[in-house]
Length: 243
Image (cartoon, rainbow, N blue to C red):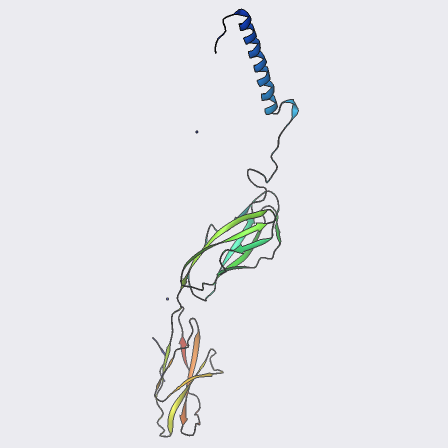
């Protein structure tokens, strides 16, 4: 029995009195401007402070362990997982209440919400990509708290069309004249148990139900006119490539 063969931006006044009035007016205007300036600059002891989180660098700030999570090419229907670490790089704690992906082909696991991260504390999870169509996909994962979005991370990957696989099984025909056909059996475990995948009258059979990434073990029995089967043949192995 032979092994299988594999078939992815002034008027100027001139009188003295007028000049005096003009100068006095200038003095009053200047004094008024000075007072206004002092008030605007915090004169009289009044101060203005920026409330943390309302401007400038926020007290809580989320960063990711990657700038983009790239899954590369993945066969359609096949999961691929990449690790992701989220870190609070701010000076105060943040509470994450939601982590969502913009495309259902991406999902998160390993992080339980709500999650509070103290300053410089991290949490790790896994992003899984299962492409359902062939071709490139871009998305993002968004991390949110009660105050809104804390950060987002771009995601990308490409789906590959699943390739069809088949295994050709061949054997030496029986020398018995009572043999009228053969049954072909398959298992994913060496030594069985085996399941029947087809029959043949000649010494060859093509198994077109083989799946990518699987290893199969085949045996054959001879069948006589009464439907009786012989003991199983020796076992042969077929390793199916991915994709």
